[in-house]
Image (cartoon, rainbow, N blue to C red; front, side, top):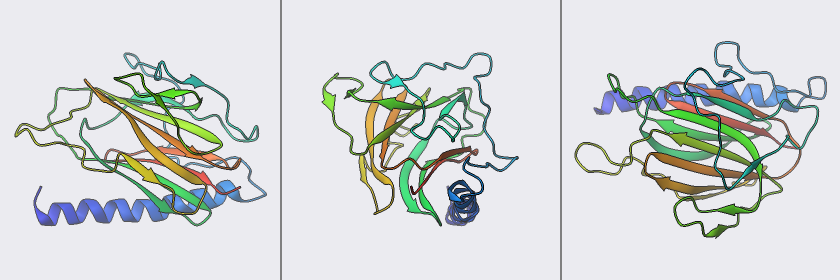
Length: 211
């Protein structure tokens, strides 16, 4: 990817994160307890044909901690099999967890994504070793059909394996699985703020409102 293209991609990511921060603010507003997602970015609530709605076998789906919020439940396809980075950024009313994808036009692969609320105990995907993730509540983010190395043998994912919080509701984002075609993270957070999800071609964002 040349410098000009990388700059345009980063600009789109920054602009979208700023816009999604407004969604997070709406999520925290007293008059609107449920998160409101942009109509052109709202993910499907159920899996399309061929999608695997099953999350990691080491985590059991649960309801969201705040009964006034919609459940964190998504299963569907994503536009790229190349996940390069994960970041935690402050929003206007909480935290934004971004999963950055690199476009891969013409790829025959159909990678999938599942997102769900989960409870401990947690374990590492390949070894089964126990894992601890900080936070009162947790979200599983699991990609299937992903590439770990490119055609040149270079690692695709260059982001952190263990991302700490930045002082908001997010406490930790831990890479728990990078095995075969799977890449999984668990997001730990505190409080009962609403959680909103947006799925874009090069950016998956989870917005977690401060309590």
